[in-house]
Length: 132
Image: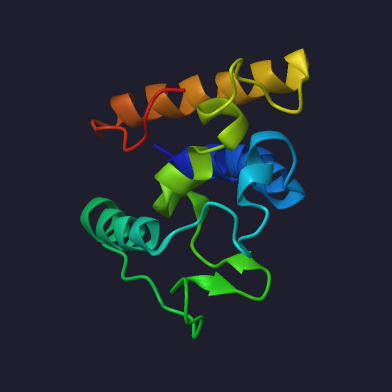
């Protein structure tokens, strides 16, 4: 049986990553930080998750602040860092959760979110992310 999670996480990371990079809306509160709301503690969580759930040892970069940050962003595959891949400030911190204030994009995010959650449960994995 194929594992759809890497594909689903890649899709949702495409949504969340571009929002983070834009620095708009709720992400603006982190505009003074080079990597927005990325934090070393989430990198360490990715190390634990990748090792425990997939048996993967993550390769660190030479970045002094974030051990997996490369020239083109995070080097860790989205399915190995679900807490990061799923996070978007406009969902977590906005008075009314949204993706670019667009109903269709918000619906797309939620559909992917629930598909990931369902797939995790089918595989007997406990989801590592918090429900938006």
